[in-house]
Image (cartoon, rainbow, N blue to C red):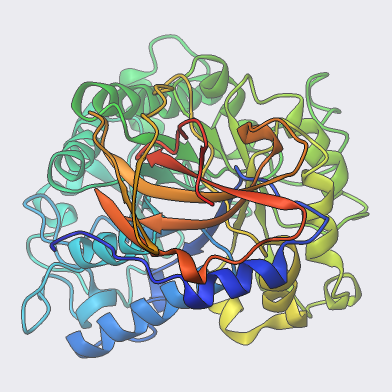
Length: 492
């Protein structure tokens, strides 16, 4: 049947019996990976791959990340004012076909394909857009005649070897919002995601060339406050567009890891970072969190534990104290593996995970970037799949978006088969199989998630393949699209 998974549990339940260990892992935890397309960092691995090669390499990446226990990808689909999907507003990305504006041949929609493959595995798809970068290299990049820099050259400034949308122009914000709305209406996205590139990182001795725009539109603000207000405005506009177009979709930002140093602001972190979000990138992340304009923040804590200027542990604590009730997913610099003595330590990432799990206000991790996992640096793939992510986890639901729990599944047993169905009104992701120790109250908080069955309606289970899990009883529950879980129902 279309869009329906019939689940075969022979191997699964042998796996459950062998891996149900005393040390539980969270049932709710965000476990994501950034997949960068700019400069072909992660995918496609190079320009001009055939469509078959593009598809095969992407599904291999998904399978790798799923085997490592991941439940989400953060996929870069708009790296430089272009698109890895058919768009009426921006041309095809050169990182896909080698020439900007050139569609894949034979034609397909990469974004539609990637979303379908991601959801097929029960993983979330977060669409990563760069808000202001328009041309990666003004001397080398392929620029199509239809690119927005050709149509509205007055919207852009050159800084270093890159061309940027001028953040101070209302027309720029309107264009970006159009792009976001188009995505929200055409694709089954789980989130819109933006990274740290708001105003660009400073180039020594060079001022970002927006003085004329400031003189015209500054409105009596200082230039720094005006720049921050420009970033505030685009965040508000995107937040509003999401809520008005598809309110189920989340909005997340992955900022540079330091908001401000304590030496600059009493609210800042006890760090000595040379760059900060607030003062250099003009991104006031705390304002966005406190106003509820974003749903989650993923600070890029790419430093090791004990770093002299920006200690991972210090920043982890600081962000947990300044989340304003929104979700915090920590960004890990796994790409740094092997780069110095601290990152040659195979315990660096495991210890970072252990530390963040001490905070109830931190809900998970995102790793930069995908290609690092293909190398299995320091054996971190093994650490995740065999230990920290040994059991699956659901992406934590956001009660301010939706907290309606779905109905319990129905179980119809015929001989040695159980048909699991759902007849409720909410759209579902599938079903979850949970273990609860004997003697414990049958509640989600006392359970361990063992497997997610991805289906929009029903699943068949061969009960002969369901073993007795020593000291535990098995239950099943419905999982909706927002990852809310029904009450548990006894399976065996």
